[in-house]
Length: 251
Figure 1 (tube, rainbow, N blue to C red):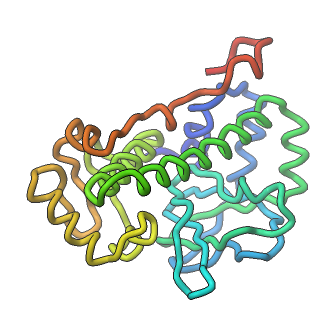
Figure 2: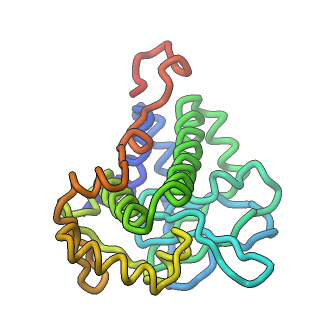
């Protein structure tokens, strides 16, 4: 298992290669993690956006609550993710974030984030790259929901999660822990919990995946990728080299 610091560093390193000094600055973002129980809210919609959060351990999500009381999950956060990036430029949060499991979270005041970004141009771009790629995840999921059937939606989600966990060595090959309830999967993909259950059974019947309690085993990754029209590009794309052309350190 990687250290708490290396989860974040490895995630950022997918976008930008950091110098030793940059890495030390980045380490400040998760230098003081605190234990947060499952179900705890990290922030609430329309409350001041005054911290950036690093998920050191555990899982979390952000969600939107509609006027009729229904909820839609927007972001799914795994270890190493920086949370609250998209809301950083707003005065108030546009969603609510909650822990899906008990975990460890480090909170970093917004004013110190501003100082950190001024100290390192490379780290500034790394944080912007993380925000852009989180937005890309949501866009990919929306395209998947609007364009594909239930089997494809769930296949895409499983491949997305596997790929993101592999980036921080939190998946064991084609097997990984998924703490989402069927109801929560439905909130993420626009499906009822009954439809999610039937679709998981169908994927198992076709020999594509197995779900045992909260562990997922992908039995045929290539077939799942074909069904979901899944590509790793949104998760692997590095920073545009034209943004930092002077030192040759960009990925």
